[in-house]
Image (cartoon, rainbow, N blue to C red; front, side, top):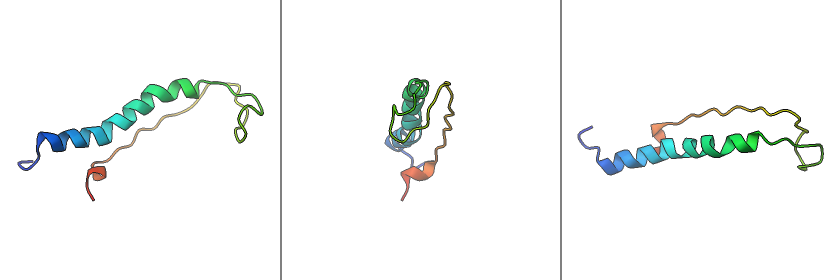
Length: 64
């Protein structure tokens, strides 16, 4: 803790918080779109709005 600088903390915050923030901000509207058969080449038809977002992060992303 003594060797941790504010810049280190900022890097950790960005690595672990910013990506999930943007996923939670922009994914729901995309997940809510309905797709008919053939609308997307490899997608199954989707006639109901649904989906799950699971956010996982780790401090290991700043090391190594």
